[in-house]
Length: 208
Length: 112
Image (cartoon, rainbow over all chains, first blue to last red; front, side, top):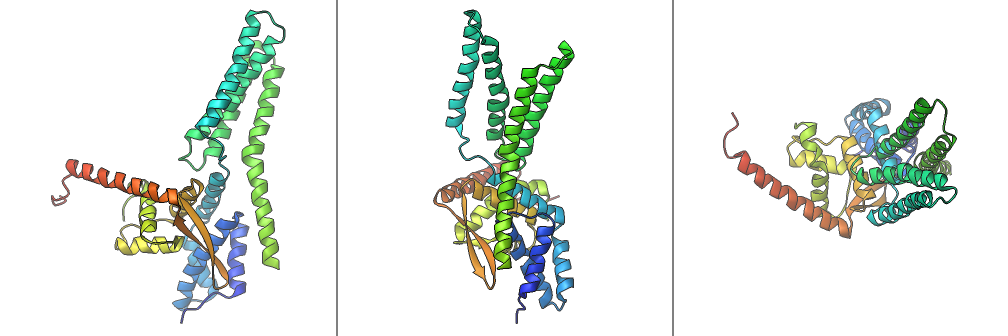
């Protein structure tokens, strides 16, 4: 007869998953079930729970489990509103701001420099990363790639300005930092808080 | 066993094909079904399997259902309505690709 896991044995598997950072509720349940099935197969062969679980763990490497969790988070964190229509609309808006600045410059309207810089920044740090993100749907680590792109682009522009003029352009620096923070909130902190919240709810359910 | 490179582009299609034949399946069941159907020649790693399943779910091709099995939840995957069309299109594309490949590599000849 098939030997099923006892409650405390299943909890041990869950604790192992939590200890290696598997916070996503669905991934936790899936991996726990997967490991449980393999552990039960070893139990049927006469191993005790510790040995059976150890063998099950050896079958799925720890970093593979972490990758599954991270990839799932990345897929779920993908902004659903990001489509061709959305990109077209914000593209039109951002380019309109930039060209409005150019128009203001040729007509000697004050504050034209500010409007041009805002338009340029929105295109560089808003539109371009979003186009990149949209085109990276096939890749699980797109969040990292887009964030990397934004920060590198930002750092490059600020540094180039510093090398050329030997001083930090305050507008370049501040807008880069603000946009960097916005991207971090959108793609790192918000999904992280969401996962932590889910993990907290899950733990509360477990302890009941 | 086949190389990772060879399997990379086909894992999603294998999953879609299996799910188009069965109402719903869970991760471990998929790996075992593939192993059995291919006499252990195709072994899908957990990393590749679950990443593909999560991606297909995120893109709306698959839907999940949690079913209690004993005292633990089991996540089953099934095709959505639009997912069934995606599956049919991908399977047709692969079939056509294999036919074209057959014109380049004559599969009827013995492997030297």
